[in-house]
Length: 346
Image 1 (cartoon, rainbow, N blue to C red):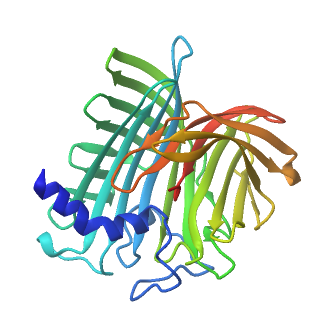
Image 2: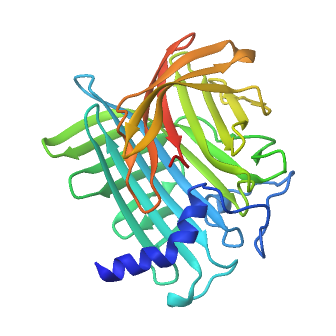
C-alpha cells in the first residue's frame, strides 16, 4: 500500500494533465503540437504517439439486459508522457493508467490501474490491435473487431465490440480546437460499435447487448490556462443521428464549445464555438461536490432541444484524480441515450 501511495504521488501531475484540469497552460514544452491539415494514417494512428504529452483510448457503452434493465460501462486507457521519448525498462517516461466502471440505476463500481511504460505492463499495438494494462484488455484482429475485458473488486465485464459504421473525425478533419487561444487536439471516434457479452455484478452474471462509442484523442496542450474543466456529451438518438458536444469551462464563468453532428451514414458536420449549448437543470451533491446531473442541451441548427438526465446521479469516479462519468437518457425533440463526462468540479 505504501508503494502504491508513493507511486500515485509521483504521477499526480501527469494524471491531472490527462484528466483535463487546469494547469497545462499554453506551453507544450518539448512535446509535439497538433496542427491543422494532419493526414491520419491507419492503422498506425490507432496506436500511441509518444512525442505528444497526453493520449487516450476511451470507450463508453450503453447496454441492456434481456429484461430491459439499463447499464453503462466505461473503459479508458490513458498515456501521459513525462518526456517526448521512449526507453526500455523503468527509465521509460511514458506513464499509463486506466479506469474501468460499471453503472446501474442504483450502483456505480469503479477500479483503477497505474503502470509505467517500458516494462510490458501496459501499452498499445495495432496489428493486431491490443490495448492493455495488467489483465485489462481491449484487443482483437482489428480496431473494428475487439473483445473488452476488465474487473474490479465487485464487478467485471466481458464484451464483444463490432464496428458497423465508419470512423468519425471531429473539428476540422480531426483537428479539434479547444480554446480561443488555439489549444487543440487530434480527435476521432468510432461511435458505431455493436456490443454483446456479459456483466458480472454482486448478484451474479447478466447477459447484455447494446452500443458503444470509442474516442481517440491526443495532444500536448489541450486546455488554456484559463480553463478549469469540461462537460462532454456523446448522444445517440433513436433516429440514427448522433451528437458529440462539449463545453470547456472558463474561470470567468463563460465557456468554449464545440460539436459534431453525425448522420446515420457517418457524414459529419462540425459546429464552432457557441453553436452547442448546455445548461444545468438539476444539481446533485456527490462526493462533497455540486454536480449537474440533468441538463438542457441544444443545437438549434439541427433542431435539437433535449433534456439529458443521468441514469445514476452518483456515478462518481473516485480515482486518483476524481471526476463524474456515467450513462444518460435523452428526451425532448430527440430521444435516445448516451454518456456524460464532467471534470474539474471541486
